Length: 371
Image (cartoon, rainbow, N blue to C red; front, side):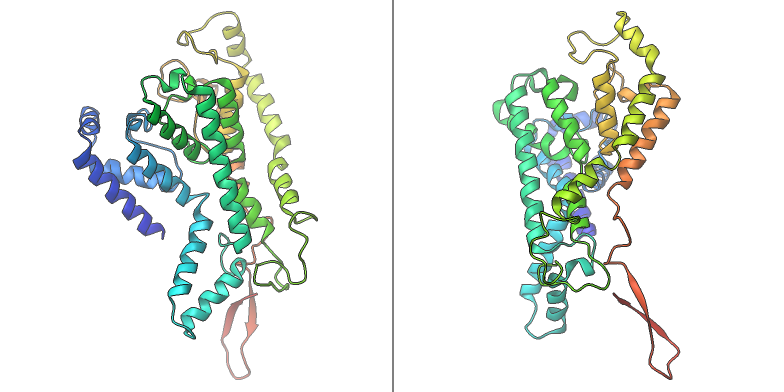
């Protein structure tokens, strides 16, 4: 699946950039870029949700290319938050195409009946449906807010009505995990950027919550839905409910993040004072100011969500944190590491847990089997 998606991504990007969009070809030529390496880099960055681009302005040069933005957005979803959904869909399709009473059919039946015993990112049907609904709801919410608050904002200046819609949709798809931007984030309203910061903080929380909720002990048997047999009401109550797992994921690093905010504000106190005294070099008309607490908050939310978005400073290429002191940047690195690790299981996952089974008498070999 991963290899196929990368190959498809590279082929689509290369063909489009090489043969279909002369305006983009001219822009890339001016920057000294060639379609092949750019297509390869963009396909990997999109599917892996890295958010990096060879071009200096992310994918803003593609703001009027709905096909490219739509395909990049699809790769972003399929490589991260939509990965469990696609894996189960692939298994279902293979299971239905398999011949009855074949070994392949039995293996796929077992995989669908006991998904969390086989793979960390394969969930029971009801949990996969819940994940799909949450994903669509979050994308729809952020798209609506961007169009409501920023339809006529500076970030959307020069775009047609239809272009504003698909750029808002792309930003809603990309912002939470990948961090690519097709419009100037610093031109959006503060209400929108605050919601963006919250979405980055959430990040892959729905996937992590589902993974932890569907994880079960080694010695406990699962029913066809992937839950423990005889337990029907623990989905929303109890220590392993969706509510409890979501609360744990969202609050597990709060103390650490508060400490990081305090340290950065302490280390950057001089820059806050200079900005407050009117020593500003930031471009006129910017609602976020030069050096403000909100920009620090946004940078930390982006770091914890491992997104890479920034409100920037002046017209420099680097992000807002590029003008921080070394001590503050090291704190930000710690936040990124912590954000990257928050998606790990609480303990050894049942899909990778094994036990040693002694071979029958007369045999010297041992075999590893799933618990």
